[in-house]
Amino acid sequence: MKTVTRPYIIVFVTQTIDGRIGFRGKRTLLSSYRDLERMHYLRRNVDAVMVGANTVLIDDPILAPKPLGATRKRPYRVIIDGNLAIPSSAKVLDTRILPTIIFTSSKFVGTPKAKELYKNGIILEFLRPLDETNRIDLDEALEVLYRKYRVGKVLVQGGGKLIGELVIKGLVDEMIVSLSPKIIGLNGTPLINIELDRIIELKLESIQVDHMTGEVVLVYRAV
Ligand SMILES: NC(=O)c1ccc[n+]([C@@H]2O[C@H](COP(=O)([O-])OP(=O)(O)OC[C@H]3O[C@@H](n4cnc5c(N)ncnc54)[C@H](OP(=O)(O)O)[C@@H]3O)[C@@H](O)[C@H]2O)c1
Image (cartoon, rainbow, N blue to C red; front, side, top):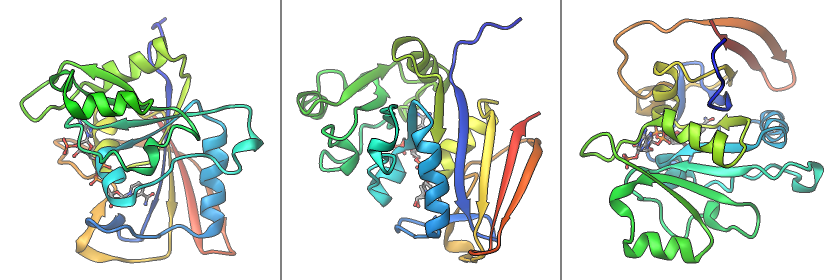
């Protein structure tokens, strides 16, 4: 039997009929209040909520479950930010609400930005970059979360690049896609925002139709 060395990964994302998750570079509200309820339910039941750096740069989310008091869990907010690019003013960096971990390249150890973040209570995990663009190994980041922070379940909430990378590496256990009855066209970011060289197949587990909002919630599992 294979030893478990990483958390269980759930992706939750709201996409349009045409497979987009928001206008490029612009905060776009696709979720209905019912969809947000679904999202907060999931956030209340995981140990960490994770996003990619662009999602922080574009949406500036707080990434906290609501209501916060409704759960004993206090999920870490985790940002994958190889270039340590998110601004110090980002809402997710307010650690009075919940702890925040940034995974970034070891190139930034001891830089003024890293020191400032550390002073503000942010947990920085430096990983050796895989290339010159400061890509970090997501397997390694997940293993650190699992072993060092005892994170057993992660909710990944986007964006398309991070989801794409996790999918291609076979790191997604469950994918919940809320299909919103909207269309935003080619200037939208795709759900999988990277190139793939093969077809990835998941197994459909359930379909739930929300007749109040017109959303269809599709739950897939890894094959
Ligand atoms: N509809 C929804 O449910 C939903 C949810 C969340 C986000 N969104 C939308 O998604 C869009 C953002 O998605 P996106 O695809 O542009 O970006 P993203 O996945 O949020 O972030 C991608 C960036 O994160 C960093 N990153 C990701 N993986 C990394 C790795 N392995 N190593 C190092 N750094 C890594 C990279 O930063 P560098 O480029 O600096 O290397 C990368 O460009 C926004 O428009 C947002 O509104 C929608």
